[in-house]
Amino acid sequence: MGLHDLDFITEKLEQLKEQGVYRKLTVLESASGPRSVINGKEVINLSSNNYLGFANHPRLKKAAINAIEEWGVGAGAVRTIIGNMSLHEELEAKLAKFKHVEAVLVFQSGFTANAGVIQAIVDKGDVIISDELNHASIIDGCRLSKADVVRYKHSDMEDLERVILEVKDNYKTKLIITDGVFSMDGDIARLPEIVELAEKHGCLTYVDDAHSSGVLGSRGQGSAHHFGLSDRVDVQIGTLSKAIGVVGGYVAGKRNLIEWLNHRGRPFLFSTALPPAVVAACMEAVDILSESSELTDKLWENAKYLKEGLNKLGFNTGKSKTPITPVIAGDDKKAIALSKRLFEEGVFAQSIVFPTVARDAARVRTIVTAAHTKKDLDEAISAFEKVGKELGLI
View 1 (cartoon, rainbow, N blue to C red):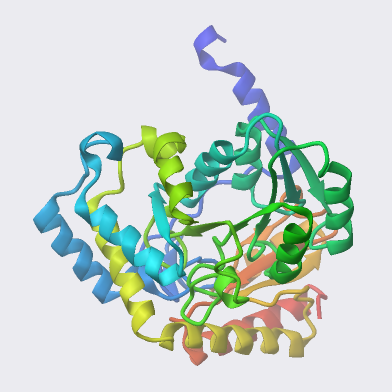
View 2: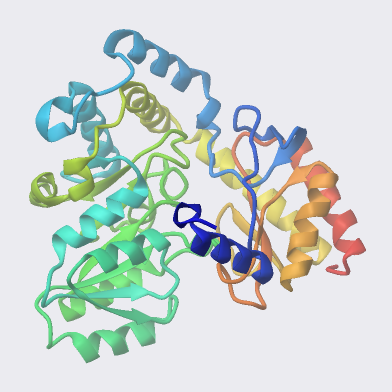
């Protein structure tokens, strides 16, 4: 084998196969909706982050098409050169009003928002205090900073205070970071208690609302709004890629924070701006949410219906309090078998196994949306009942 055959990568791929974690990508062959064509088969889709059905919403599609006709398909540059369109600033103004903050800065994704913001606001001599189950983008954002990182046990306020007391006299800036909703278990951060501890001990707070944006709050404004803490959480990260249905991320907070990130948020500085169609579609989504709570109400109604149906059958759905509902099988092989058999029965629900979750906590993760009908959910529950009994899970 020659130098350019990259044999060392082939060896690593073989290791993945031996470990049972090698996979091929699922292929979506239709629009993302409550029923989608996946790997050539129409199924009920319970794995999409398209919480509100915006990914295929007619108003968003029309807004995107109109923006292409007027503005073209690309921004043409980074925003600090000539890619800063008035559309971008209009979206940021809408988001700031929606989030009840002074200002917003839009990034290319939620991941790049965390990568850009964390390293810009903490430095050597500072410390990050991070929930042990925070998302990979937060972990990578912490690694990109020069700050020290310490972790506290998941949603354990006694352990959080223990960690704060251990580090608070040794660092200048102390930043507590948490997800608003945790993506694997669907539980909500204990934000009121986190903020109380932060204020008591002189720490700043940072919340990643990837799975809270469009979900929590009276109109989907996120976890800070949900708890009445919009003016007490220092940094709010939101996504435009999940409930908003398009792509992108943003940071919301004080105006001086946003001005600083204009100068030091590296993905913002060195990546081309979001294309006009994306920006226009995101604005339309924010407008729809501002007009009515109909979609968020429907989302929560459907989430409750599916969760109650699965619990009534005897499935273990963990500690979920949101539309993310894990069906915990425990064993990796059972979780994979559950996902495979559900697909054969017309339901797509992705299995999640170690190392993404603990070895004894393998599961199929379901995410219900506002676009699902009761018929969709009844059929899904029936499929879970049939397969669950076959596999001895209920």
